[in-house]
Every structure is written in C-alpha cells, then in structure tokens.
Length: 505
Ligand code: SF4
Image 1 (tube, helix red, strand yellow):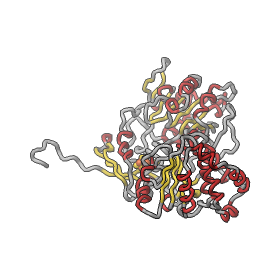
Image 2 (cartoon, protein in one colour; image 1 turned 180 degrees about the vertical axis):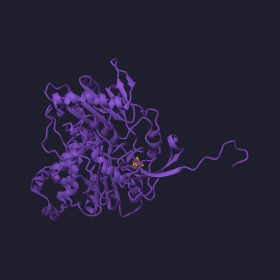
Image 3 (cartoon, protein in one colour; image 1 turned 90 degrees about the vertical axis):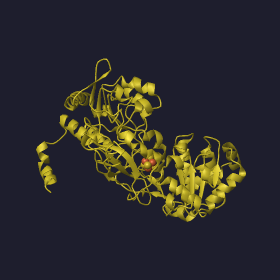
Image 4 (tube, helix red, strand yellow; image 1 turned 45 degrees about the horizontal axis):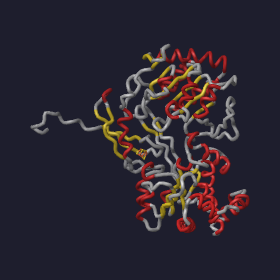
C-alpha cells in the first residue's frame, strides 16, 4: 500500500463468463464483479477470448451492462394499482394470490382466448418469455404480440413461401464470402453478424474480397466499401429488379442449381424479362457506370452474401425488397455452400409457422405465430365476443414502442386486467394493474437465443453472475408461483424424487 494513500487497496474483482445481450449477436463477455453478498456489483466488462462465437470481440455497447443491471429504475417490489391509478408496493404472496383470483373468473367466463402475451423475453432477457408463454398456454391462450412481427414478418412470410416453413430462417456465411453486398444495414456500427468490425476490416485488407454498400447515406460501412451505390431512398426494389434482369440477360443465373432445387423459375424469368432496366435505374437514381460495376462484381463473385437489415425490411416495398434480395442469391446459386447463404440449425426456434392463420377477433394475419403490436388496440377494442380482456406484458413496452401509442393507451383502459413482468418501471408498467419485478439477465440461469449463425451456431447456457436483486424473482419462480396459485401444477410431492436426486451429490 502506498504510504501516502489513505485508501485501502481494493479487492481484486471476481470475473464471471457470460454473454452480452444488448444486441442479437450475444458476444461472450467476462464480467468483473466487486463486493460480496448483496453488495456485489458488475463494474467491468471485457471480451471473452475463450468464447467460440465471438473469440474476445466486443463493441462499446457492452460497457453499458453495469448500468443496465444496476439502473436506478430497477423494480424491487411487486406493485399493485390503487383506484386512483397510482401504484403501491405489495408482497409477492399478495400479488400472486390477487392475480390468480382475477384471472380465474375471466378464464372461466370468457376463455383463455381473451388473454394475450405481449413481448416475451427480448434482447435483454431471453429465457423469460418461454415461461410466460407456457403459463398462458396452460390457461388456453395462444395469442402473442411481439415487436418481431413489426420488423421481420415480411421476411418470415417469404421464407414460408420460398423454403416451405416460416421457421426456415436463412443464415449468412459472411466469414468465408468473397463478395459482401450490404443493403439497408450499417454493420460497422450496428453489427448484425459476429465480429462485424473485424470481418469488415478483413474484407478491406484482402484484395480478393469485395464490399458493396447500397444505401442512400454514406454510412460508416460505406466509407470502406469498394463500391457505394447511393440510391434514391425507398427505391431498393427498382435497383434489385434491374440487377436481377441484367444478371439474367448476362446469363449469370445458376441453371444447374435452379434445375435441381427450384420450381417456378420460368415464371420469375418471364417477369424479369419485362423489367425496363433503364427506367428502373432512373427511378432509383443510379447511374449506368455504377450499375455496370455492381453487375460485374456480382458476376465475378464466387461466394456472395447479401446482407440486409431493417433499412429495407421496414422501408417502402419491404416485402418485395425481401423477396428480391432472396431471389438475388437464389437465382445466382449463392446458396447452401461455403461463403454464401443457407438454412441454419437452431436448438430453440424463436418463432413458429402459421401459414394462412388469422386472429379471430381482428382477422389480422398471424405470421410465424406472432401478431404485430400495432394490431393490439383493435384486438382489445373490437366488439368480437373473444376480444382481448387480459394483457400479459413480459419484457416489452408497447406504450412507448407501438406505432400509435395514444391508441394503445386508450385500449389498455378497456382491459379487465393487465400484468407487467419486467426489470424496470416502464411506461407500460405505469398503466398495469400489477407489476412483477423480474431478476435481470445476469441474476439467473439464462441462455442466448439468437443463434442465427451459419455454418456453426451456438446456444450459450449461462450461470447467474449475481444473486437476484432483493425483491425480484427469476421468471421460473414467478410463473411457477402463478401456476401453483391457479391450480395448474401437479401435487408438489410429485417432485420430491427429483429434488432428492438433485440434492444427491
Ligand atoms: S456486438 Fe452486440 S452482443 Fe456484441 S458486444 Fe456489441 S452489443 Fe453486445
């Protein structure tokens, strides 16, 4: 100890392996924890070099993990709504008992169909949703509103038509491609694939590999691209259509692949043959020279990945954009071989397959088993006998994130019951009848669910780093207590043999 210092030497940090959940890449992290017992805090974050997925890679967002876990908005007690709309603290026993007492008659008189889940896990909290869905399913509810269905269901719907199931999700072998074509994405800042900045640097340094960025803005990723096409905003479908038409004219379609694996090719070719390429390029404001470079680089590619994101999936013609970007790699045969696209495996699918299904009260299409939160107000305010009466919000905040938040708030006032399970007091929690505080993702057993990689993907099971924040419970305990209070659980003694086996070293 420094003789001039009055501070005692600080104890070394205890380092725990886990994963960053602040985007769907889920890089492996090591979390440095100070203190002991109830005073433990995550104070440092570093990349985990042993993690086979990310191999030590980390972006600056991971440094926000301590703030996320120890945020002043963390809930530490169940809350119950007073008649004036404000909340008062209550005990877990009271909250669970009262929720069960209110849910029971609703299920008995109106059926489980009148209950819906909103959210269910999320970037910050992956496993929680599965317990919520299991609990609601036991009550007879199958309705799930999830933000994924606002962002990605055009993509999922197309996968259903192109590959046979909405659960057939494609992955990208970016690490081995020789051409990366990026549309509507900015991986240098927003990632979207593992070790994104390292991969982009690798592309830049290797003269045999190329990067094309199609984006109206000169993004940080475009700064290092071999070709940046700054098209007119919202015209991606025109550019992609023109590109496909020109590639067909230049005989760049992989006829052997198409003959072996595709149907309906002639119909697609007939449509492409009628594309007025010059007109569509003018609509996209793309010059002939830039287009010629784009076409030649695609023709020269031996292994191309087309990397897209919300920029085209939530822009104008979003579903058509998704269809055309998939056609681009399928018609040219950049599929199911190293450095291209493919159908990845996954241990626990994030969504389902529901071709043609419609929600009974609103007739909104249910895609991948999910409904858009934008449909939520109609599902509550409908005069259908099975209109929604109960909303179970788990790790979601539709009052802040839906497109028409004023209407969401109006609809919530017509509910018989709303329960929010979350780590923080959100805008939606402020309107709930009961708010149940969940332990954070680092305070319980968790996994990383966004296992989209190709050709190898990873399902990372994680041990708790900290004990649950006092007053909170992990979701298995929350939903176990609720299920028991609702009479959904078998006799507790049935589990005695399992408990004995678990306790036996
Ligand atoms: S890339 Fe995503 S998962 Fe990795 S450190 Fe950044 S925010 Fe976290």
